[in-house]
Amino acid sequence: MFEDLRRRLLGDLDRLRDPEGFLRAGYPRYHTLFGRDSLIAAWQTLRIDPTITASTLRVLARYQGRKVHPRSEEEPGKILHEHRFDVASQAELPEWEFPYYGSVDSTPLFLIVGDTYVRETGDLPLLNELWDSFASAYGWMVRFGDADRDGYLEYERKNAHGLFHQGWKDGSGDHLSIQPPVALVEVQGYAFSAYRAFASLAETRGEKSQAVEARQRAARIRGTFDRDFWIEDDGFYALGLDGAKRPRRAVTSNPGHLLFSGLLPREKALRVVERLFQEDLWTPFGVRTHATSEPDFDPFGYHLGTVWPHDNWFIYRGLRAMGLSREAERIKAALLRAYEELGRIPELYAVTDDRIRDLSRGTTVTIANPMQAWSSGALLDMISDR
Image (cartoon, one colour):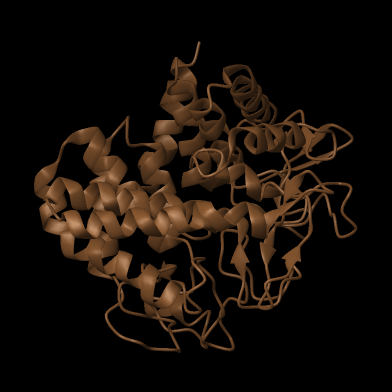
């Protein structure tokens, strides 16, 4: 029953594939290389076409940070946020310099996807080819990503005109209401997984001392994370910590990204799952980014109430990893329902009164990209599971 859908999704991805083999983030907007987006799309399509993953890792390694440069927010070992290859496109953001590196999570995702690729394909030549890049990414996490040495990855923009928030719910303003340096909740799950991923890569290379050190860093996050992020009164994790290490209490989809990582104690993970499916987050078309019970909820808000397919993919993969197949199937069914209603799976959409609203038609303040690699990749990966 999924064959026609599979062909259409593969066609979407083919239209986004760069001649170098990686997936551009979307069309017509974001039709270029993004670190976070391209890596997640490569992860989603790894079982279907591993050449996408290999190409993505190679191109990001080529543009990996080499120096400290505040205007572009480049730092040694850091994986870019975005690159624009043509002068006209660069001129749209005159205060930036490309490649632009304002992303806290591209670098740990580079390690996670790299290790997943090597384990799935056994491609040791690529591991050897990119080993220095993997080691440099790990070095960025240790030296720059955790500037205050508390074990968490944090961000604070270096370019006053750059992105204020630099996780996947990024933006130029403080729409998340967290003052920097910011330690987002899901980013700590990525960091935990990335340290373990680097340890795995190092072990494969025979670099035992580096593997031991990386595992110790992962263990440190596990040892402090619940203490700092869990809010017992809410039965949920904070959205993040601000610069004073105060938790930002808000019910969001972000903790759902932790489910795949193995960072959470089982009992807390189950409470997260239960909370994600409560009516202020759950819709017939997937989990919202932001709960309707929050005072700043906006059903059309880019990151404050809409539904993102790739966000739901992280939750889906976490549910599968936990063995919660029934809950995972609810996520898959919701995205299939969205596809049937819209005739596509766009960047994001709104849900009001249990009805889906297509934001890719340009009729609201928030405009969704009609074609997005990590949306098509999300649904393609889900229907590939049997």
